[in-house]
Image 1 (cartoon, rainbow, N blue to C red):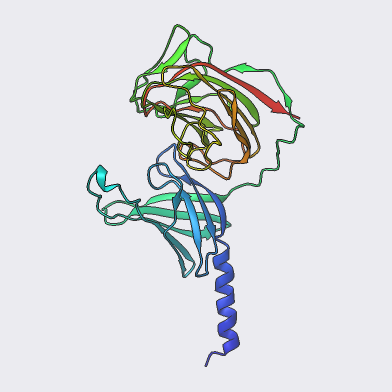
Image 2 (tube, one colour):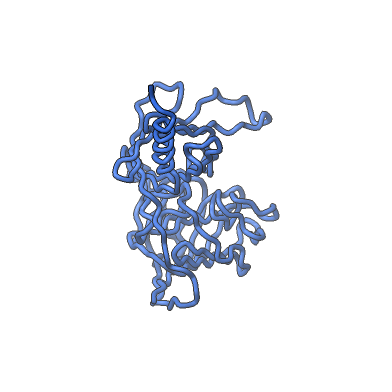
Length: 317
């Protein structure tokens, strides 16, 4: 007969192991290229387990629906978002299902969509690094770098090599002809100031990826309330304090400062994000190496955007 003390110790051991799944994880999809995810897990092994995930649906920050651990395997699921009935009939319910084991403090996992005859996608997760750099006034500006030379796309390449390259430079302006690939800079940066002058048309949707991981949204939303998917938002994470957008067809500017995880955004001369914390990846991420320098991304696969200035000033001690 197993003693009550033995049962307690087994339960305590299992709970302790379950807790090891908690925290923030940067995820690399090991099948294919250019995909990175992020997950935060809390209270695993308890009835109040919860989590957030980027991104299962629509590039958003998705709320995890269920979390469980059985025989050392983590399983969490994400239900598809409900569709507005006015926009058409809902699709068949298909949950995203993620499974993982802890192997040497890394997650080794798979992903599939319930009800589909698909091969599970493999992925790995590492704990998101603690970044100690703070925007505390101690950082000095280096030499500004004109990352767009006004003549051609030297210094940039297509992020998706299989997509048609339909970016061109005319009269000193970089413009796309969607659908096409996003652009990614060949140079990588850590802490920096960025000045971008851009122009969009009605219904445009673009974005600037910082370190290839964090998107500052570009959106034609003049006169609308600010939100986490609006212009100058840290996409799907932090809304700007105000919507400083200009009407479509007018030149606009972003002045962005990123030090460690501390982010400030000035939109058309108005500070809209003031030293906010970047908790983790957004859906634009082409890499999950949060502790390393990364490239810039200019999103061009959605709709039209024009750039006439892209100046990066490295920040250093």
